[in-house]
Image (cartoon, rainbow, N blue to C red):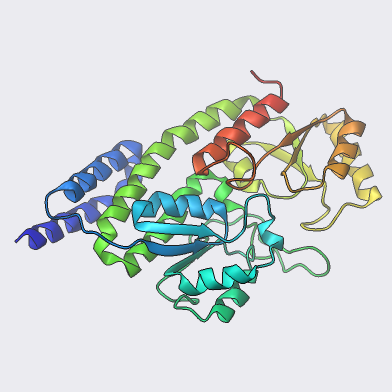
Length: 327
């Protein structure tokens, strides 16, 4: 009888959860509370070995942990401070992927090196298998263009930095949830509760970040790499150029001269650089425009204080405000 009641309760809560997008943070919190109450009821807790999950980046690790909670053990392949688009897998990565029950990737040609790793590992997770997660599924991509030819790395399938719009966390965690439920259906209600709790906490933070960045609307910005279209769209910021002429290609003297002219004409004084990007060219541009360099983290763990997904945005919002002289 207990199992039957539990099954019916879970079914009812899943039906509510399917409608949670229309109710915002309040509905998410209520549904999560109902799920947690169910899970704490006598007889519903079951001892279980944690699922081994591998993600390509630390952003996806943080979001997978938000959904999986104590039921998952998550390892990110790309260490903090490394460029995931240029990452070269290590021998230990092969063993991690081989042992994983689920693998979560960014997709959109961002982590193409994972395809070879999956093939070499020969584990249970392959494309279109139950534990394979392309977190970009359902994302409204920006900057879609033809495939790149020549040097650098192309963003032909669309700009891959979609996690930098925090609203996209709803889609990303939905993709992760579907995979975890597929390989561990007995824990479905736990994963659903974790996700709804996370989203209910994230929603007011997004409003806070929007309010804090309102002072930078209309302020022209420049970035080293084209990492910020989703961030800019969400917070209504204006990036007018990049130090790189195209992704992965170092700037030529003529490109820097043109960029400096554009910045001086537009009054752009803030240049955004990620920690692993070279300082030399950014410093040159700053000196010739009277600009200030804002070091932002595009990934969890890239800077001290960017310890998880929400704190990544806390850090970046504070750094932009400081660069703009906003108190």
